[in-house]
Image (tube, rainbow, N blue to C red):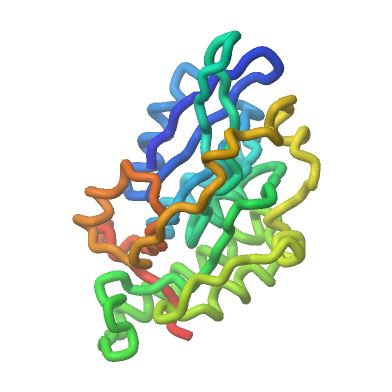
Length: 256
């Protein structure tokens, strides 16, 4: 996942963009990005297909400690007569573990046009044919452990059990499930309908019209090599991973 600071003028303090897949390096990368910056109370704008379960949890806890706010969108730069202007395009994707990063915000706003989608976590190295794959007791232990960690994190962040119920009901061989406006409130992913509580910008509702389009969707799971190759991209990849007891990265998720 890549982090960058977006400065805007004249009516806002700026925000942090968090784009791409969460990997084992992401918590450390965020710490390096945050060093020397006064980020307390800032807003994180998410555009991510998820990634490593345990690293997303670690990252989310860092954000809550800083009292960050969260939303979904894509930062757009446009040239105008007065100079460069920055807007936020709401047509972004927050999928899989990104949903739990959204949950880390002290206040959370999901704009109309954003896509927030969930599914089960799973063993990524067997995702190509999850039904036909075999699983060891160790695999099941990893999955059960990570579900427990995810459940504790969800409640610590103020999320509802409905979020876990919805997520864990979607197996890897089905399309991700997109949450409705009602479900965003039911799960407590959206805590406000007022954008000014998260991004007090006069021009937020007026992004460049030509950019209001969805992004292509790739496969739900990728290998470790694919994660590394695509970690700098902004496309939706529907990725899920979990960390194995050895400390290596091993994509994981719960059996139905």
